[in-house]
Image (cartoon, rainbow, N blue to C red; front, side):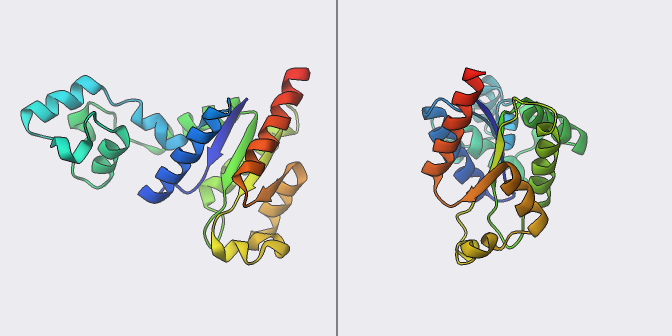
Length: 196
């Protein structure tokens, strides 16, 4: 089963958290598309090693062996240029095209809903997937995942989510604060896909 893992990817903590959750999904035989990981795949190990030898990168800054997440964090912080790594400039078109492939090829969406409101990109991805579900039976559902205490205190009132977004998710899935429940639901949907 392929899933699209949506969430606000603007801090290293959230990116790391989503990547860790994605590893758990992979261990359960679920194939997550994680938007920020796609950009790490473009880093060529040979290029990184050449930059270390040239003194443009320090081994202690990137790990040994190098960690693509740490290298991309240097890029995000302006400590290393995409050009030095041989990477293309990131444009809205590139982000849209990559993420759209992830959304359209997924069988389900897991959306991290932490924060005081749903991230606008995450809400857009939820809406696109919901639209695809209306005509494609291989699109099984959307799970909202919440870990934010502000939302958890409002669990009985829809986790404090925007009511329209909440309605979309509840129409085709659910919101939970339990990652084991996320995995269990994805496995149910995977079994449905395999049986049809």
